[in-house]
Length: 305
Ligand code: SAM
Figure (cartoon, rainbow, N blue to C red):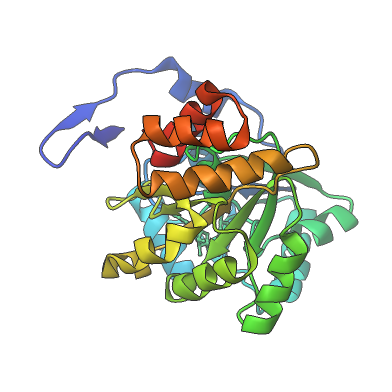
């Protein structure tokens, strides 16, 4: 296997014993394998996924052209069947029959982990209901990838996925999410990113931190964190920001006992717009009575320093 390190240089991976390990494992027949695929960078596929895809009797996928192109990158030419949001139930029935006949079926989506804002859950449900075996092969998912690089310190996250397209419904859903302490994880299509930020700004406090994780693992990957009050200006500052794929993370609501923190945060944000980090921390400490060091650390985080 070769890996492109940059456009000029290609490095050969030599004899990694672990490559053979994937082949030595057991892959029972009559099993549905739920296989995660890359979310952009084609080399983010696992060794086990590659081995299983090579071994599978059939690959069930959303779009046979897209998955065919991915498989071709690894030199695989497999029998594929379509399993997308418009035929998932019928596809499930046919896949159950194949599994009952003892085939190994790989289930993939266009990108990332099947059944995460993608088709797959109905197929897995039908396979389980038929008493057949389901094995997940984990890998990339945009939500977890974005969270890992966000720096939002919170043990909890709430996966929202796609918000409703209609303004009223979207704002109603956001209003229901507003009190949650968990980080919110939102998927958004590029043509709706401005609407999404406008809706967030209409419902949430301007001091909440948001993280835009755009084009993850791709050439123009961009991860930007700012207070919600500055988010729309950031999106609009570059026309390219209305293109590409986005995960939007929203900091969780301050909980009881943290209200003072929210107020300190609001004051800190106002001061940071006018003063240095040191001055803002010092003034915020005088206004709120909170510790200057903690405010200084927080100010650095807000400024991304
Ligand atoms: N199943 C996928 C997963 O595991 O993440 C999600 C599929 S969903 C149809 C597509 C959405 O995921 C996009 O609109 C975007 O919100 C997010 N997404 C997928 N790939 C991404 C990437 N490379 N960078 C940022 N967001 C991405």
